Image (cartoon, rainbow, N blue to C red):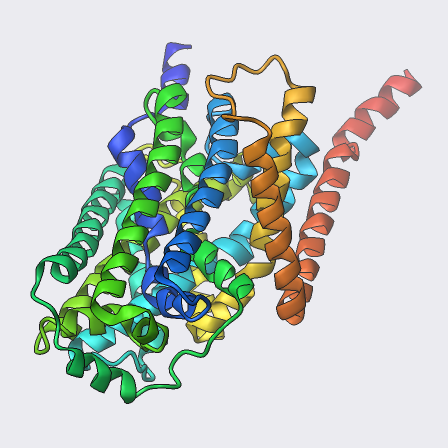
Length: 466
């Protein structure tokens, strides 16, 4: 008996992630290429620097409201799987199944592909020029990054978390380096800035502030990653909440600092038309090496995000496999490496396939946007539902100032869902159909489980005859 219990323990996730590890997953996943790609467009939607900073602060507050909702759910249900666990408990097994299904084939591989494409772009820029133009190797480098980081995570949790901590630390130091250059260096030569901007005045067109908010919130995406690995966090009652909230606050402060640095060097007008805002900020101070330095920073930043997504995303598929027989291979936990190897492999194969099929950063964004905020909204409402249907659950943390954060978060989700339907109808339709496929698979599995087996029928028949 003792041996079987011990074996089961080693085949399940073990709590070995401390507060720093957990916060690194959140910060590392949020800060990717989004801040560098979105800052210029967001700047074009406002007329004053204060309005720009207010928009980024608003995005941080929205994300913090969401983090509070997830913190209550994660502290009450500290299991691997995140939204999958909460939707299962709040709405029923069908909801968790559809979420995990779409996460496995749409959302998570698409999100990983998005950042992998950004890595590929700046990886090429580092070796060739400061330009962000791409060539035919874009998909190859993106797929290579996914394959290498998936392999590192298959090797073991220790390797995965060490890679995450290192990449997160480097990217934060890089962001702070840009801030230091912008604020501590002598006043940049404005003629260099004007010359750079003049060569690409059409690089960024003015956008409505509502669309700019979508870009801002996309850049903050990833604050909920902690919930997916809750079963591997030490002292979850304390560290889950601390990681979710502190990770979101750290990212908000970094985004405000980096936008302040862009404003100081380029000014709002030049920010609005910059094709490579971070590159031009550093090049204004260091014309010779600025472009390559920033390209290297963004490569490190995107690799940290891809690694965090791979690490946390495989735990969703693992949770699906442990609960549903049709995907039972995904629910195998390798005792030697202490990782869900099958889940990591399947996630990696689907992601590489999407990289090849979609072929670009923009297409990958379109592929994922329809489903993401629908599940955010459903998970937010799960806080209300579980308070009524499962009051017996111990909740070490409850949403601060409830229900205000939930109302703010839900309103933001509804706005983004509406925008996705209006601007991405084709992709929304594809995701809807894939969701129906998931429901059909769930229904067929349920029928198979409820139907009596042939051996059971034979036993019943013999009992009737006798």
